Each structure stands twice: as C-alpha cells, then as structure tokens.
Length: 197
Image (cartoon, rainbow, N blue to C red; front, side, top):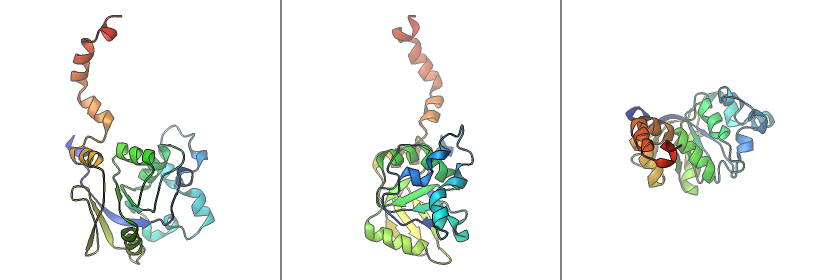
C-alpha cells in the first residue's frame, strides 16, 4: 500500500474566502445525477463563478492549483461525496481551513485528500500569501503537521487517526479490504451464518 501514502502535497494554493461554504455551492445539485465523477471538476463552484467573474476558480493564475485555502465550516450542508470529488477532479489534493464539516472531512479522508486546520490569524496569513501575484508555492507536510509557503512555515492541525491513515497508506478502506481478501475469505469460511445456509 506504499503507493497510497500521502506525506506531502505541494503546489499553488487557491484562496477561497468566506465561511459556511456548503456543498451546494461547491457542486450545484443538478450535477448529482452523474453516473461517474468524471467531468465534475469543470463544474466546481459553477454558480458562484457565474455570479462573480473575479472568483478565484476563474483566475488563470490559479489554474492547476493543488491546494485550496478556505475559512470556517467548509463543506457544510448536504452530505454528498460529489463535493470533494469535484475538487479532486479539479486537481485539488489538499485543503487548509479553519474548520470543516464532519462528513465533508470524512469524505476527503476517504479519498486521500488531507484537510489541515489552522487558527483564524494563520488562515488570514495564508489567504494573503496565496493571493499574491505571482503566488508562492505551498507545501502541506502531513507528517510534520506544517504548511510552508515561500520562506515561511506555520503549524497546522489534523487528528491523529486521519494523519496515521495518510502516512501508512490505509486511508483507502476498499484497497485495505482487497489487500486482505485471502484473510477475509478465511474468516468468512468459519462463520456459521455465512457457511451454514
């Protein structure tokens, strides 16, 4: 499972100001009818981007960004996996914010997208740095719990469980289950409620 280890993420960061940005804004509900998640990235924040031509996701300088910086309670609202999927399909590999809705945070973890928290003052510092032109490269170090940009580094937070799953490559529950398929079959063969029918 070593190829699933997520230790560091680096790249340009998109600063997306605002608190309580919900999943309806991340990906409008009309895109929930998709059979696969392919193509969702182009529709991330679509309605917000139409209403605001200056939206960060409309700006060329943030094309190809791999990190998203957000405010408080990001990903609140409906518990749809489409929201982090649309960000992932857009190229986002890590998110930094003051706080995250619990289900959004869990969906990101299950997809291998670390979400790191920072306090309000640090978040403001990151917003300002990411908004510079040209923006500096950012790096999320899951192991050290730090966020680096330019010649600066700040401390971030992540619960120990998700951090361990990223560093051991066990964040993908399906892959872990498949890797243990032989053992699972062995245990299942001994269960009377599976073999006794």
